[in-house]
Length: 64
Image (tube, one colour):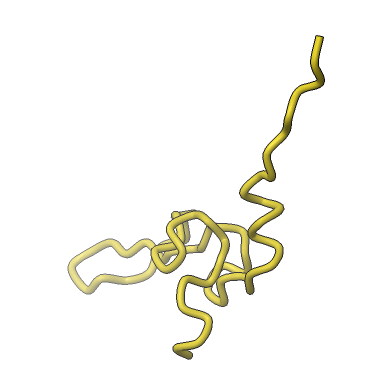
């Protein structure tokens, strides 16, 4: 039986690129939760990073 060929993973490829500055490469950020008529902050929740869309890689490293 021939040995299996393995392709490089996305994580290995992502190590060459700079991490997302908003989530520090984790893909998760903390969002504030507001409630009430005066929109007071009542807590925090985890959310997917809207800048890198959970990849952890900075999509525009040369723009900023």
